[in-house]
Length: 381
Ligand code: PMP
Image: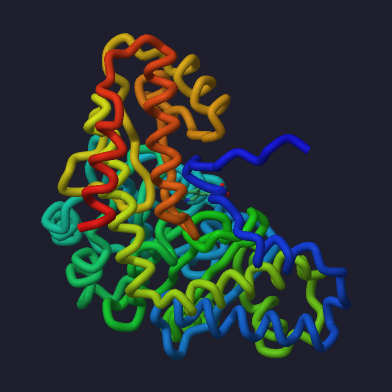
């Protein structure tokens, strides 16, 4: 087997052996006691990860896009108006989902690289009422992080259901559902939670569940949360066969998150982001996101003049590190580096060394060791 490469794309993130082992153990009955134990624990842990005491978690085979659909279709009815607060690619996707299901919606967007400000949101809400407001926590195309807590404050008295797409944030950046007043966090397993792709994850607040129960029907079958609720309460019940190995792996992933400690994990994501950006800046790179909005889960990195995207990423992959190209209008001008999940400081150092070796091989004039020294200065501080 070829030597595995360090996967620093913006998800999936590298999967640690404990989680891979859980995935590889023999498949068990989807309605048996082992599965029931893992699903129950995963549900409880998922609620802890988003700081939700009394809501309902849903763990379903799929990926982030399914959880986006689940969140919207179970909270927005035919007479509701949805506001999509978008800072990039995945806000646009949210609007596409609204359009696909005929949900009445508006998009409040900003230029790529920053997030909509709370003042802009407030101004829109003064002009028009919305029943559902959805935002992207971190847009994976731009590396911009939205001020979710401030949005929640603005929305506090509006009565709107507040949905947060945490696919590129949950488990790496705080999302305090109860304290801030978030109604739904939707997310996926493969980014800050460090599990292989394959799960759509949602946590609904009690208010969001009330909203679902108040809708006569939803344009969904597999993603109707009321069909999944009995299974989440009692995994011995059958609705649609859960992916038992993936759920077992996810249960292990949530144990790892809680063993590290949530606050410690958020801090580590911040530290690794700072270290990598210091290293990359010392190597001559600049960043796409406005510094006021930079996410701690990924960096969108601008190439200096003369560094060609394909050659750089191929060279880096040959040295054992995989990063992603730009999405949409940034394609060819940036690379995207994920730094989320169960990344270690040793992996951060390895990545920056591989970038230096790649630049030198491409004939760039980089000062030997400058990136590594900048990384070490942050990690040791
Ligand atoms: N939202 C965000 C913020 C994302 O980053 C992604 C995936 N990159 C998605 C939604 C969609 O998730 P998936 O690819 O798992 O369907």
